[in-house]
Amino acid sequence: MGRKVFYSFHYDNDNWRVATLRSIGAIEQNPIASSNKWEEVKRGGDKSIKNWIDENMVNRSCLIMLIGSATFGRKWINYEIEKAWNEGKGIVPIYIHNLKNSLGYQSSKGKNPLSHFKLNSKDLSTIVKSYEPPYTDSKEVYSYISRNLSNWIEDAIIFRKSF
Image 1: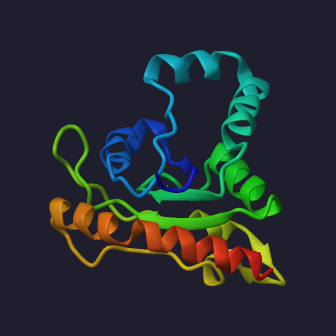
Image 2: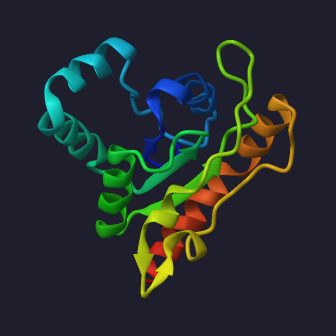
């Protein structure tokens, strides 16, 4: 069994892409909220969302941040990043814009949400290694992530412990 991780992503745009990536055996199959469950959580307001994130990050060693076209600047993604960093979790940013969605479309490349954060006056995006698969074909992107994800997770955990 792989590491226990928490996925950070823009639900509306990228839940299909994330579901595809979850089938990779390198990571523990922790649940991602279904659309019905997520709508229920959101109806509870900010406190409900924060509690859901907090509960689901417990015992996770790493945050896998899946960067799509609209990931940057999202309030809860920023909260997840800050929480993961402050708790000493590894962070693995992966660009997923070249994976197809449920309609078979790819998206434009988004900005790395880590660039929103500073560490010693440097963008966290320049400190934490991010990964962009070097392919445009969705199947090759998936395969590339599949081959490398477990190593990226381990590297991120080791790197984070160095701070």
